[in-house]
Amino acid sequence: MRNWGAQLGEVKAGATEIRVPYREDLTQQHGYFHGGVSATIADTACGYAAYTLAAADATVLTAEFKINMLAPARGEELIARARVVRSGKTLTVCTADVFGSVGGSETHCATMVATIMSLAGKSDR
Amino acid sequence: MRNWGAQLGEVKAGATEIRVPYREDLTQQHGYFHGGVSATIADTACGYAAYTLAAADATVLTAEFKINMLAPARGEELIARARVVRSGKTLTVCTADVFGSVGGSETHCATMVATIMSLAGKSDR
Amino acid sequence: MRNWGAQLGEVKAGATEIRVPYREDLTQQHGYFHGGVSATIADTACGYAAYTLAAADATVLTAEFKINMLAPARGEELIARARVVRSGKTLTVCTADVFGSVGGSETHCATMVATIMSLAGKSDR
Amino acid sequence: MRNWGAQLGEVKAGATEIRVPYREDLTQQHGYFHGGVSATIADTACGYAAYTLAAADATVLTAEFKINMLAPARGEELIARARVVRSGKTLTVCTADVFGSVGGSETHCATMVATIMSLAGKSDR
Image 1: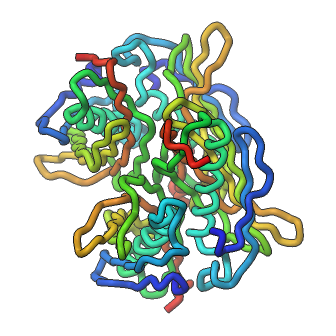
Image 2 (image 1 turned 180 degrees about the horizontal axis):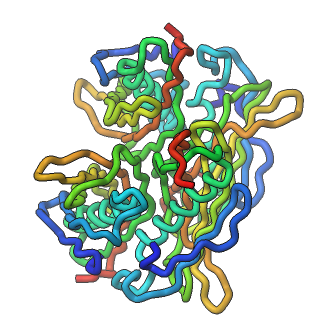
């Protein structure tokens, strides 16, 4: 992700944003961002969102996620915004929405629901 | 994906394989392949598997997929194997399994179910 | 569903609600509504929500759905509220949330994302 | 489920089967089994499959599942067969396939992947 130029945007308790600027090697044959890029930044945003509410000594990992593609992921920038739906001791459920930004106007291009697992006593901090 | 060194392996009617060799920039903080890499090669393998059974003048795109992470994606190579579960005129359902290969021994590290949509008259061929 | 006493609540363009009152034969061993009841009313609410935006001569059917369980489904009534996230010619993506109502106070107990397919020229109307 | 006449079929370590005979009140407007019936028996079969491998003092509950509908669920009997894909201390991933049986001939009508959570020290046994 660092290699993609992705950046963590706004971070609040239970909500995060990740932005990745357009780069030709992140696109598929039609010039849109590859679905794998949408999935990766949405998954990562969900993980960070869960992490903001996790115990101080816990790390998080993705148990599973599902993504529905809604529109072509086009634009100068791809933005994933995640929020925690339910935070549990072991499992946290998050949703993320992915938007393609063209000239400041955003198109909703994917939606994800993810289950994030907390592992106590294995902090990355 | 080309930039990742990913390669299409065996292709049969309704079944495909994609392999990507280890590369440090595809890993996360623990040295395992990033979950987004597993998702991307599994999704792509599903798309190709659906494509092998699609009408000659059709292109395919992913409507949605879900992936469950089963084990850390570690190894010299990550391998996604997909097969068509049901091929329809409009929608094709595929599953893919992802394996990490260490010294020729494979560990099952993720499983995906994907819905692939066929668009007639929009061939990429 | 009729046998369950389920009722269609508020219906707007792209949004619907289904309510089912508590009944012992809809519960599992702990006295909560069975997960299958949550899934069924959420799926049905998604189908109706998609249907409100479908072409006049179209019928709808569920291609797939995913549901995350967030809390025990307890209460005098179980309520599913669905809305269309993206309405397409062939595929419509909906989300639904399920709430258990206890004395007028609601608990969010499940969240669903569903892909609904429209079939033109096969109206149920 | 008991009210549906559903019965637990073959049970092995990590694999179970649930069968439900045709009954008019389990069908939708076209006379097929309702999607909610497929989802419910598949989910239950996954739960039992996970339970066969869980610790003796543990109970299980469904964290999430996803189901893809492949064909109309028609027949004298609907059969869900589940198996454990990966059994973990906390999370177990299962798949289930649902078949409609007509005169002994089976049609594959749905496929599920479910995440089942084990709760130690809360045995139902």
